[in-house]
Length: 254
Ligand code: NDP
Image (cartoon, rainbow, N blue to C red; front, side, top):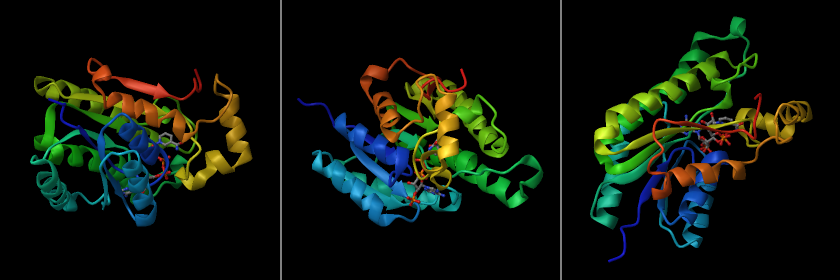
């Protein structure tokens, strides 16, 4: 009897690191559900790439700041899965969706701080909570954090602090879900060339050189440096990794 195909749900899979993670996870033989906030076309393109690999994929719109929409979202996903697999469950939840905020402490507004809390902590916390009954035992949670939770660069106080909160939340998830043999781990990228933050690591020569100069491997990261790490955590080979923060930064600010 062939093993059941596992399913990963990846938030923010339309672009950047989420897209790369979705494709690399499909290459490992998993079916993938992705979400996007507004870029339906790019989400559909990711779905097509995954389907071309022979795996099932579907994209749903979800604003991960909108906790009130989570019950309906979990139901929509569950209905779809039940119809197609006979079970409402996923195996892996990858909390990847996120946005940047670069602002010195004296300029941060309450609205900006609330937005960072909502997308990087509150949304991650409650989306995971809502999916808990629907993550198969022995599955996993992968939270995407940042190098900025370990080192401090001026202008990232709120963002870095929210990612640090996610690092700690991951340990609590690992402890509280251990009885169900569900693992929870962090993937913490260094600065990666995506659209993130207006694409500044990719497009601003000065920032790119600064990152490269402070990275042991001598360059800024690209999405291909990250997706495979997330995908690995969605496999049996990673089954004994739990409560860990895996930084994939090429050795940034060591
Ligand atoms: P991108 O800007 O390239 O992609 C962001 C993704 O998140 C898109 O799929 C976007 O959807 C989705 N998204 C944005 N806001 C929301 C929202 N409110 N609700 C739901 N989905 C949303 O960013 P990256 O791929 O670079 O970043 C992914 C994760 O990696 C983030 O958590 C980020 O903090 C983290 N990270 C990134 C680093 C980097 O240097 N790039 C470094 C360290 C961590 P849509 O396409 O519809 O807008």
